[in-house]
Image (tube, rainbow, N blue to C red; front, side):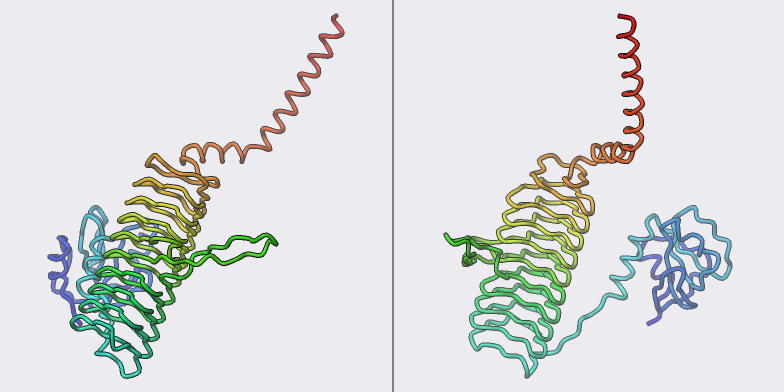
Length: 348
């Protein structure tokens, strides 16, 4: 596929410097680009590649010096946003799948909408409902009484356990489990742990995306809920009876303990741990590797373990790094104090 620079500039609202009739067929990083590629520059740390890149076309911010005659520049306000528009328009993967594969095991009671596609070795159990234009890829398992909306993509090797509900336009990546048992045990008189049946489900609302190898536990009673528009990275644990609000993004390796409620428009960094039965208010940002041990009731940025308001955390960290200096100063002060006390006693 050949794409004209003039066409792309119109799409992203950019200004062309150089040959507007140039075409490209691929997108590459600035240090790896070849002739016929489009590349991009929006971080100053990559500006060192500008003189040597082999790309034919480059997206840049206004103000970048345009000294190369062999390079066509498209000047935009935000090259990263422009790049996203180009990828969506021309390079988005189609995830092709045709019909219902002969190897799929589909119970006769399953209700399919229009244009549903089912891949090889898929299992769909009794009384499930699958909406229009949904694609269920190879080796995926959907247990009984699951409801899946329209325009959903379940990538290979996804498991959706019984009675869970998935909304419209949801994307679930490979290896993810929706509706695994919550971690519920009570010790008996002898100290043996007895499993508590987890009889709830998981509800995933519209426009949610779950990365690969995410585990979302079903509720003990009621529902674990991922609300509209939220995006979860790979390798995330969401325990039973949690709620994640709308348009919240969570990075990889985060663990959320049971019955924790996370608000809307939150951003949670990688490897964050949240204890159970706490509330995180809307518009909260939590830095990577933080440990959240109590509820956060005021919007803002939090960091550390235990997580605190970021200004306090940074000031505390500064003091910790200076402990050896403080110790030396304290020793010196103790020595001087001892000398003063000795002098006082001698005068008396």
